[in-house]
Length: 191
Image (cartoon, rainbow, N blue to C red; front, top):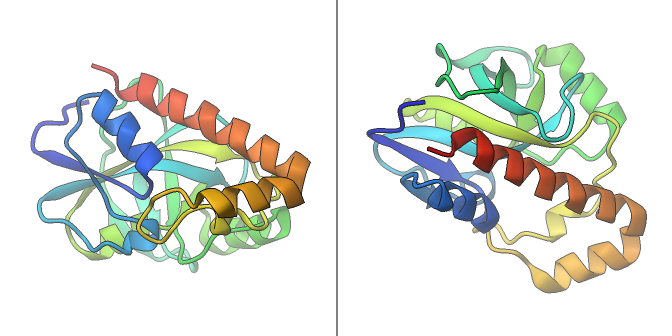
């Protein structure tokens, strides 16, 4: 992967740390790009949820970003990330909480995975690629996960503690999946 001239747009501070450790030029754009679209050629970088066969820890080097209807927002050859799978990413507007929602989105869009930033970045006309690691599989339940991150991408510690206390098993499974995905992401882009 040639990262020269690219800015890696990360939703969260955890994703941003991974990009920086890998030596990539990065910026935190927040959830759903709440912090605004940065200048330059952008890579949507971070974690995503599987809509089908992709498993936790797999890395997706997207060749297309679509909306909820399957309409193409961006298309390209991928960035050539070693060990990554090519596929289609759905740039959604909200966190997908459960398997039923994932099934509906997969059927309507044909996408392999979903995130909340790639659609906005694609619509900006600045997207050069998408590199996402799967943090939760198609059967994961992530109800309440959206309370653990502030809109600007910083961790909401009280929200995280409440989520773990109320969602216990699902929360622990999600945290493990996120850590596994972040490690896979870092390994995939390490120079």
